Length: 170
Image (cartoon, rainbow, N blue to C red):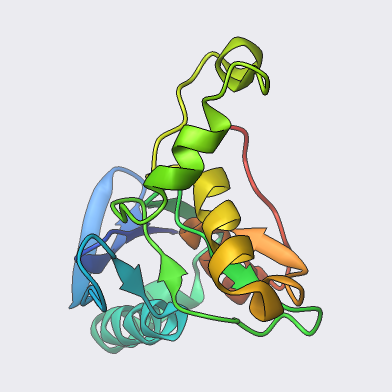
């Protein structure tokens, strides 16, 4: 048995597979907080609650199959800045991939002196994680000083499921 979890912006989707056969699916909606124009945030605790809700639903439908799960595949939203302190506590709502607050930080990163585009091959865009971190450093310095780990949303969910901090190259 295999379990698939997709942490999307609008919901968590779960899929229980027996080989190539889909046994069951479950979905739990997620909301996006927009505390200011151009801002887009979610609470990681909401991701976990949605995951638990989906897993409970699958277990209620197929308890024996869920007990036999031997692998979990994860997919999900990218570029969100999930900030943890040294005790692995979430410091603030995750700044999502579609958040636009870090335009000034992108302009800073695009200066020729930094050579970011030459180094990475990519332009600085507000959706990426690095400009978000610069924004937090500038606008929430006390919080930034407490940041011990920065995880993408899917990596945070992987940590909650496994207790291990693992990220894939992308």
